[in-house]
Length: 113
Image (cartoon, rainbow, N blue to C red; front, top):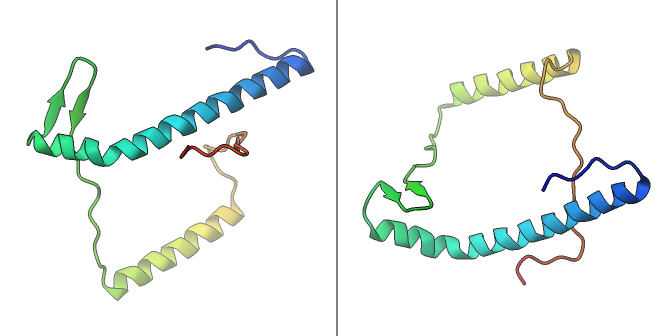
């Protein structure tokens, strides 16, 4: 839904209320997805294929990134680089990526229900 830009206080409150309602719906859907996830993974595994095509979706198998145990010398270099980056960020303004966002925290909504 493309909501009109609010031109009054009431219109602004209506837009905010609509956003809160949609966030509540999204939390409910995310809870449903989370509860279905184990059965979904098992169903995909049973098919023994890397790619599953249906009329509504293409599902592909991917691996999450691996994890390594690095030697102390690399960990030290990484820590030094972090410190250099932190100092650089204190001394310089960002060149891109900074935007204003409005966070919505739902009150009294339990997505597990």
